[in-house]
Image 1: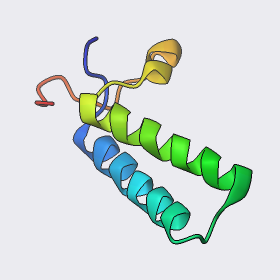
Image 2: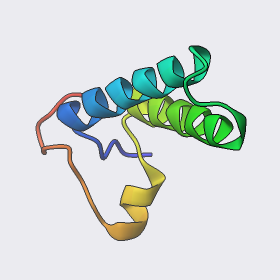
Image 3: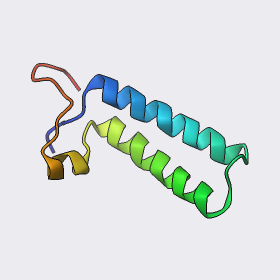
Image 4: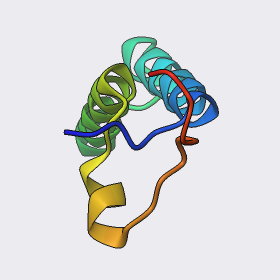
Length: 70
């Protein structure tokens, strides 16, 4: 797995994951929608932690610059 996510992309995903977790755990969003956003938050957090997004590979996208460290 070659990193394909840049720093800004990782920070944005982490921020979204935190917001999703806050919405779920405060009870603002619940039920099926709450479960969906919680799962999406976990996926965003994991992909940002490893700097790799499988969907980016499918579409040929990269947000990581050539010399950027993960």
